[in-house]
Image (cartoon, rainbow, N blue to C red; front, side, top):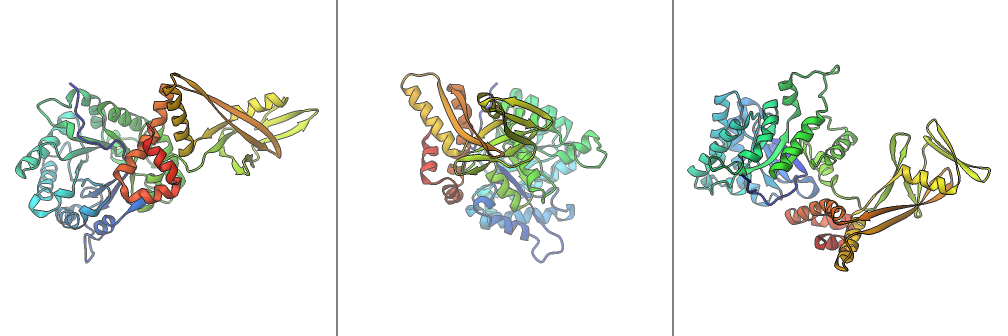
Length: 433
């Protein structure tokens, strides 16, 4: 039985958690109040007032009250969606009941918060029957408070092998009349507790990378029409590592990632967007290097590759490998070592060109991109050809559809997007496709 997706949003870049109550402070809700004022690129797509791991157990009742107070006051102006995380555990009925009680308090319409809340995040879920328990509790909350059935989204944190295996059951279970699992929105990885559940160890005590979990979550989300989000990246000072993690995730179809700080929010909000200007990458003996643009030429300045003229030809050294080449062979070698990263303008322009060709009755067209690459002062003109057909066009639409989704859902980021790309590119990107 096919599921009906309840949510219009196609992409989530940022999943930002805030403690709901901080012990020992005059205002225990100060972290919530700070997060509620975030705007523009500093504001996440999904804000998660976290009444579970980020909040001490003794403070969680107060935390639920703080969510109501802060969201009732600031929720109407917050530019992203709001999904509080409540306590839950697949093996503990008492914890599940406490999470249910917190949802009931937060969702009371007379208290003024639920009007601005889009759903709840349920951690520590187990097999599919456990997901159904959470769904049933949310159905009761909706019924008791006169909310539209299925109006509260449910997102789960995949923190156990049971939950990982349960993702394979979603397509069969969603849409059955015995549940409202179509309320599901996000599948979020929780690698820390997943590591504990798997009894995994590393020599240094650090977390395993768990690429299989990220792949399985992305696959499960794609199959069920949901959104996949990666777990937290704890080394908040390692900005490059965070960016590399996001690049790896996007190659798996997982665009969203947990953000622990406003700085991580900015990085994660910007990372999936196409660059402002296109650039060339060079495979320098196994290391990907961005070539420096200099007056329309792209220059390699490292020491892993060298090039010199010799007897009317060229000697190209890549690491320990040395090749003697003529001019045409050199261009072919450099073309094989380079790859172009298109800008938003490039992508939109190529799509518009293909649309025009399709209108003229052509099913496929060849597109070329030429550039001058410079190694050790020696220039070589390279030309990359790519055949565009309908499948290529649809693949290119993914980053453009992401941009359109952001532009439609985050008007607070319009000025920053125009500043990045220019008004003309933004207008064309919104009209293409």
